[in-house]
Length: 494
Image (cartoon, rainbow, N blue to C red; front, side, top):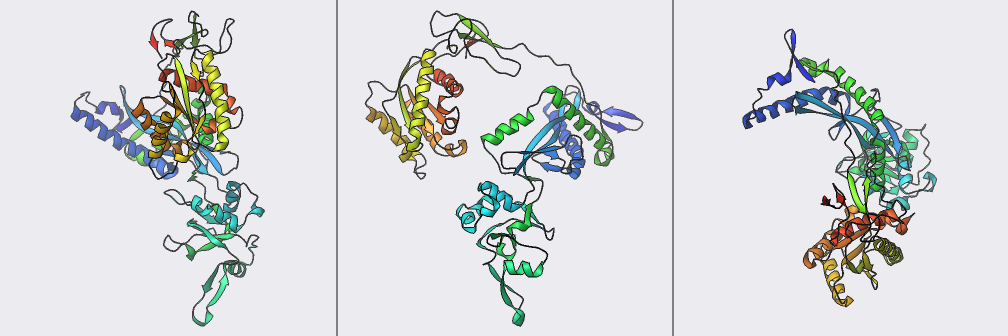
């Protein structure tokens, strides 16, 4: 609870509200809330590093501050902090606190970072390899440049890129007039810093000059390391899974961290800006919670139309066991399986992906039949890679799908178009996926996309869990009902 000291007594900020619900009154409340939010965040912004509205303690002096290395290469750290905001409740304004986490670039030598990303040892690096893999462009992508600290001088520079020549060949002119002489970057450092022994003069240097002239300052790779507290550019499914695993904690683990955050914020309010405005943050409010009974979903025991309903309850972690019970075999069936029909399959990946895609289709067809859906296998898997020109805005994809439907010569239209997408979600979302959905809107034929990344590795295309998840979508798209919620044999179809 946030209170404001007035004279010799405390007044809750809720007393500032008149209780009116008029538009003018709500606007006044909103303006006051934003002022309080700025005041209470001021001291945190001075003490901590602010990233995307959350606060992180770089020095790890606070009890709530934690950081740990994540990923396989050690180039990324997961930092834990907190975020705060003023919210209006029935009891007046309250300070809402929660844990926060973000991925940070580890403060490691730049040369080690490059070796990790190229999956090589440092002594295997070469200028040709670094230029070929476009390391310079990858280090400078994004809206904000990374900062590096030079180990021999402790100076900090913005990293503008990497040179395309080794420092033993990159020359510059030192001095003016009669004293001017041409020398290499390696010779300059050997002469100016005799105690610094360079081992990798065959590698290019870092460009640390101003944006208009990055080559004005060039330093050897081995003499620079990344500054701490810089947001990482690592993205993807692997990092997302790590974030979820590390931040989703049991209540007995999360609540102590929130108590530490609450004590820290309350301590800040007793001094500095908040105290100057007469604001005080009290103890954490506790309310008694209750766990709602799990929601029951009713499936069929098996694909037999006369099979009994089976109630499936979510466990404490929100998981569902869809295995058959009471003597049944395999997985439970849908309440209303779709009729099915012929499949049309298009592989937008490489020719080498066709076998993997075929194995997945066979697995999907087998599991669909167990659930009462009869999917007819495609006559062949169509090669869709030739439509990925990148210049047509996806129109080539739409034309290819329309032409293949006509060329297939089916007695009836396919019940489903199954597509294998080769790239990441971001890459597929630019042209390929929208084009497939435009084709669906024009023809009315349902589509189901499958990510190639889900079919590689183990268990890969034979993964029953992934196929079961795809079938949940397919059955609904084909007009079926997966389960009833709210009562056996009735309720709502889901």
